[in-house]
Image (cartoon, rainbow, N blue to C red; front, side, top):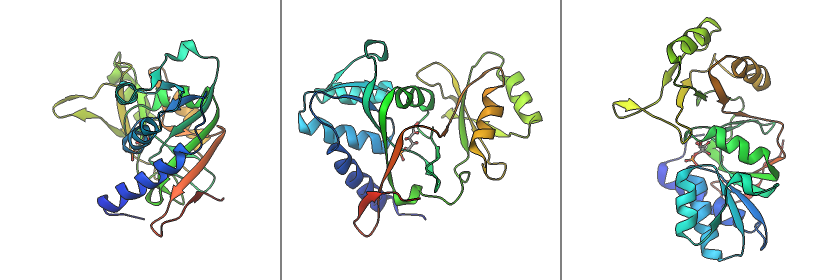
Length: 228
Ligand code: 5RP
């Protein structure tokens, strides 16, 4: 379901506002990346809660610190209480495609280190099958051509992400390959396992088997948990 950009931003704001209610003083919070996560960080800063945060990107770190949130490194925490992040696509089982903002590897590390993960999305992100968005994967720049060739032999085609004329580099100094769907990622686990087994592939944007709940803002004004 397509939404016009103004309506979509309104829904992102609604779900971000709701998500802040789950953050309690004393918690250590994982911060996602992207426009929805940025709206959540903005709301969180307004609350002036005494919390700590670990962040999935330089962008989110900067925004949180500017708003007075103490951001610590992942190595300073045992476990995060709660991570709030968004997604590019959510299927009916709650599997995700992430990485539109290029932060998928750090986002997966942060989410995997969290007792609980709340994925906040507007209803346009809900899809019957993952794939229309494509699939971002993070790749080492070393041997890029060889990695692309190997992936192509396995049937994965895509475009190396660019920022203007130059290669887009992640906060880890790696490259993002936006894979075309083949044509749908019917079995996200299988695709993830095939891709991650290839030398040079750092991480995929397929998220599953995490303690995730999906909070959705709908055009009719409701903000509720996604039901299977
Ligand atoms: C960044 C992500 C984002 O969560 C995803 O791209 C959604 O972004 P937005 O909130 O801007 O729609 O995975 O790597």
